Image (tube, rainbow, N blue to C red; front, side):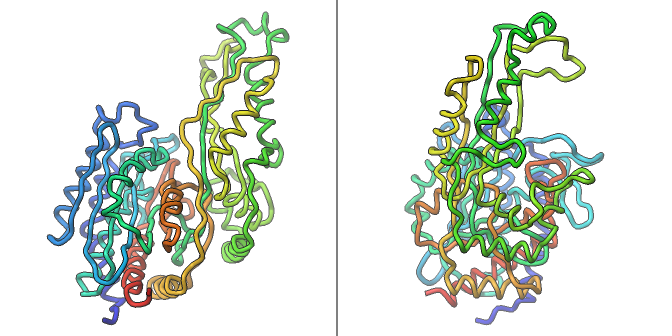
Length: 472
């Protein structure tokens, strides 16, 4: 049956206008931060509130022949799984998550993490773009196909609630539900990014990540700085020397060889093509202070830094009072939260061992140094693209965006992909999403670009229909 592209797009737009956007407005109001950021998540109930919102919407919008599984293992966050019958051989696995990053500071006046605002075709608020929309968009894509009578393969839609903590609860569910999930021939993940809002972007690699608390202790209690300084080393100075073991202070290059990997030639070529497409937009997309220079002048090098080279960010600290409360005291300790991004092919356990060894060996002044890791995951590199998926992706991008698709690596992590890549090495992957310029996932003023996501939903529906026609 011929795909009526105009009808498909109109159907998807109706779903977004009448059903999905109002539901996401309510979802943004729920402060369901991920388990790593809310030790009392079970007692607080926000995760269950988000789950119930999704369940109520699904029960109102899925047809009787779809089957909804509501899973809740003891002590773990919930999981939702939809089974959708199809024709032909093979299964499609679609993925999203409904937990969120913490609030962060810096939201504009009148905006906030739990205050949904629609302005200039953008829905602002925490979690709308990362990744609250995914479950609803996946359902709408399949419903749009079925409303037009278009065939598709069997589809399983999986929605988890611990992704922002590194998906620690997901493996137990993958094991429990392995017979239902089966062996997917195609995995569609709606949790990735875009280089612009003008075409369909497909992610070809994801960096791994790990984070730890590094604590430097020099005193049992704070001491008058005039009496102790020059005799007792500052814990911050010790910390600075430890960071110099990890990172070149001028370039940001990571000094540990265990955290590096060779960049495949195909990924270098993709970075070059993306740099030609985006140019200065590679760094202009960020809300930088006026006059700030990027770490390199070449957009290709910036893309490779962000996708295939390790990096370190200090994302939090403890042991320092705010300036207004800071007395003349040599503080007893400094704790930094260190967040590492790893090349897609570097095992995170290997990186963890190297970082632990370097930070704890022969500490400066024999200070007490401790390192505690709280999450981590290995990255992912996509297998070669099959001809049918390449053709379907090109057709979809041209049909709904009027432009050819683009392929690039993403500097962020989706732990689920590493798990699936190892579990299903023969599968094809369409990893896409809405995290484009200035969308600011994880930061203040996160937004979902509504016109873009509507077209993306239509693209996904189109590719699912073309899979049924093109794939062996």
